[in-house]
Length: 449
Ligand code: FES
Ligand SMILES: [Fe+2]
Image (tube, rainbow, N blue to C red; front, side, top):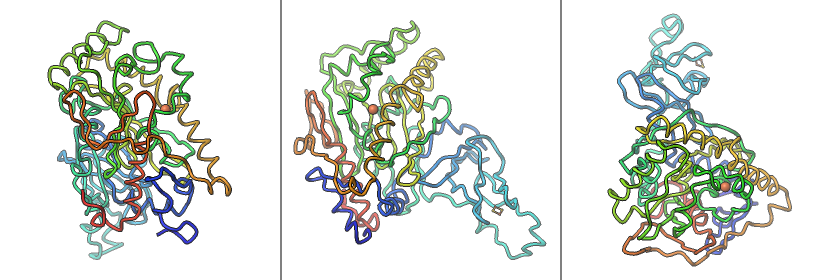
């Protein structure tokens, strides 16, 4: 329950009619409840195994508002710890990444091994005698951590479903991001560092935009004219998208979604990028291999999506995954990981790296457009008068289907196909799950799937 002024969460989110209160974006009370009911319970993206290949490697990450450490211990096991000393809470790791044998707290000097054990306590004998049971004061570790095709996910809730159940049928779409371009299982790695920046808006603005907002083409008109795409046209490699059916795919009972594309059965192998012979040859071979291995499923490719609540894959180029970390109701810290095929030639990785720089992040020509909208939309929704008036999510209401088939190919998810335009099928799916989690006291209360 929220405080008296706001009533119940259900009253703020009417997905059946496509009406959602601005309060869920700007209210301190809603935000506080989200931290407990969503971020302390959901599976959250932590990082990628390729960031910590060797024993002792670590990267700082984030779960909701809180800093965590992802590290590989001396024996090679992977852990996720709360980045907070057990003595007085000091951050034990203040670096973005590195390699270490221990995390030494800078305040009073307690030190922790890479498996989280409290191994060093200055003046232990004098100060504590036999009193301190070190085995009870190691770093706080997430109770559940799972790896999926290189990515690492964790939840603070021991009652949460397995990651596999949490993802469910969305696996088909997440795999479009995480498999290699020629569809070998999980053949991707992170290139470069994690891009991090702040945007003055609520975390749900980017999460719902990536979930399925293909209506905002006008925002990107200028970058389309510049032609930053890998083929030197538009902002992406558009030719195969133009001939495809555009599908808004949502799993309302899970909250996940993606804008996916289905090419016609007689489509030719996608045109390879022409910048350099090595690059063109690589992608042509991958596409041929994809067609050979995936059968009819070859026709499906992915676009932007959201793994509920705050991880957003972009499955085609620029191939990335982002986390939208809440930093208060009015601010989001964006983290973006860039993916390439692990065994691609250096020329291909470099070609993609340049494209990713042109497109993404605070200096990328496309992502700038989005951030400007979220920034001003959020601020213009905060006022006393503004927050009395809800947003409209009616687009495509009633047009989704629960079983989708195209030329013998069936696809999972509640799919809305609104030819040529767009729908808000995926955004409604996202808020359906948001409302379920906000109203449920525990995982056991949630509707069985
Ligand atoms: S806060 Fe870490 S040793 Fe005191
Ligand atoms: Fe956009």
